[in-house]
Length: 151
View 1 (tube, one colour):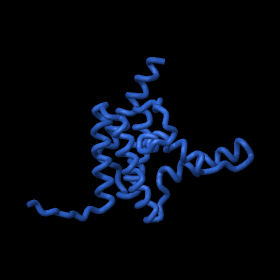
View 2 (cartoon, rainbow, N blue to C red; view 1 turned 30 degrees about the vertical axis):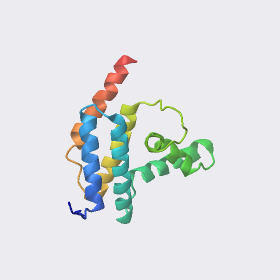
View 3 (cartoon, one colour; view 1 turned 180 degrees about the vertical axis):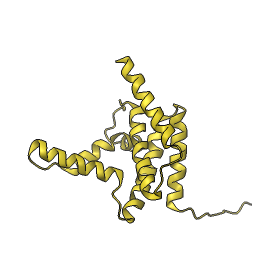
View 4 (tube, rainbow, N blue to C red; view 1 turned 90 degrees about the vertical axis):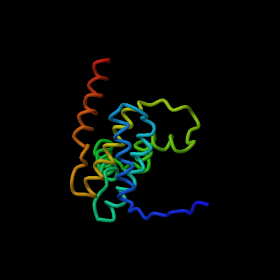
């Protein structure tokens, strides 16, 4: 009979592990749906840790900027939840039934966007960029340029 072994892993370490796997898949050009899910989980954990430190997580900053811009352009307030839903659509569709429809999105783009948010929150939590930040950014730009060449 095997006995269970329980481990205590700090949330920031869990998020780092999720981020590492997501980055590895992204850099290999593989499993973009898994990248979105793993990076999304890391982004949420790191965002909550950043908030506990009194810092503004990536998504909150983006939503604040979008709401400010919306008000300037349209002259009235928008609902934060509407913008949050749009920003999290791919992640939520992959985790939940949501619309129930097949998902038609640019998986690479959504994976890059979620990794960008997770990496921004990593920087907030640790005070230093992730070791894979430069390589990721270079790959993200190369992928974008390749798509532009097709258009």
